[in-house]
Length: 158
Picture 1 (cartoon, rainbow, N blue to C red):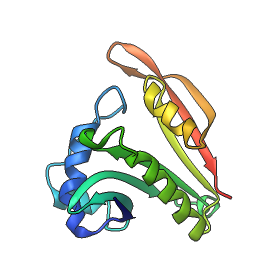
Picture 2 (tube, one colour):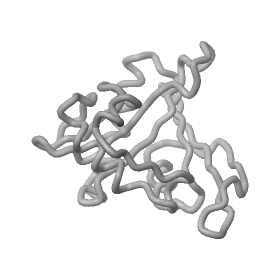
Picture 3 (cartoon, rainbow, N blue to C red):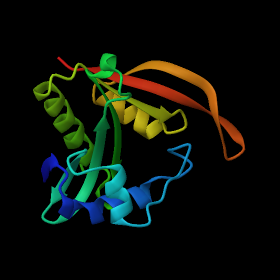
Picture 4 (cartoon, one colour):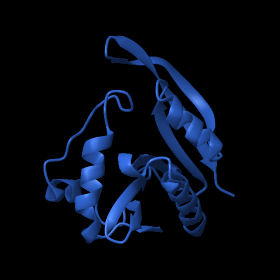
């Protein structure tokens, strides 16, 4: 498995993963992309790490500054997704290790993310990979007839 920055040839696989993994158990707003062209407009090449095996994209990890404020230049906000067929095979861990290395190389001080409180498996995964819970917006979202917490997690890059 290779971890690298996204290239144009990866986008069909990236969009396929994006369109299959997100649901109302792991995001407050399910987004579906109708085309690779639509996705590229929002996320240019190099805006993700990809886990690839041969030509197959197994997982993606998007990263960007949370805002355009100069004060946020040392922070990346992350989102991660792994193809259902590749889950449980270390793809997510490799992507997280890769983003930590890329962050160090680029002088990034902190990696941040948000996860729904109902996504217990993801929270466990992030904790296992060195992230800590930094905040909680209690009952932030109304999803499927219940209020759901928004958990803020972070990792300080050293």
